[in-house]
Length: 345
Image (cartoon, rainbow, N blue to C red):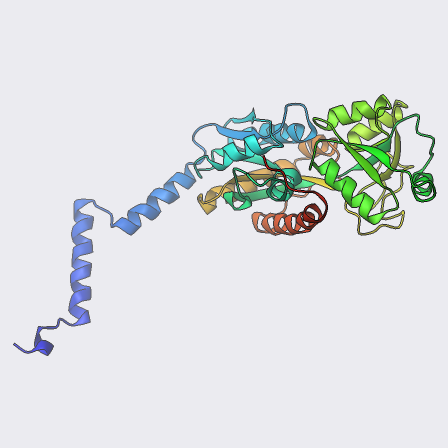
């Protein structure tokens, strides 16, 4: 028999394939590809069918923790399933973030992410248990402008007097930070690089101890959240000299922004967002995003979140949040690499 006569035509092959598919259908067996896609779709459509864990890589009671708990409360109602906050603080947020990076990519472990965890730590620590690529962004909650505050006994009334003393007296101020390489530390480095101020950095174990050191006059300056700054200034326990962001804050109307003071490129901002383990079903991320949007747009929930100190509620898409993280990581990474030696943790 010739080779050409033994070769079956494509038409016959396609007829055989169709007959085989009909045979499988008669048996109630789905083809492999169809079964996999159906199973994935079913899993996504039934999500969530059990409680979701929201990991906080920081202690209870912080501003970020408050944000996550407000979101968890709203998502519990929106998803009709419990969203339970689990605090796993320590090691500059690396314990909780590293834990979340090792969970299955099934959407049942959410993570509150910040400038510290995704924008600074990868540049600060040589031995880190996670990568930014371990997470799929869901949404950005918002940005918080930070405030440069001073001890109540500091003999300067405003930023100009601070700067003049630093320039003419070659004064180096003690700046209490939230820890080595924290946002408070890196923002201090940024202020020192773009203004006449010079600092000696004094690390504390978190923002609260740094604020207490300001109240007691143990350090001269610190960078803290607007909520804390407003409370301390109102009580006469601190002075506020400048705020981050584009404009003055409603709770600190007499305090100029760095932009207003002539430093438009100075970004003294913290940000908070939500992410999940990378590699999961895209429709689950879409569902989480849609429900986060519903919470962020709810007037009562938005009002609670604004009290944390956000200038506005953001809620951008996963794609746009991913671009934001990449941009922030690149910008702050350059500052860290130029100014802060990495840590052999």
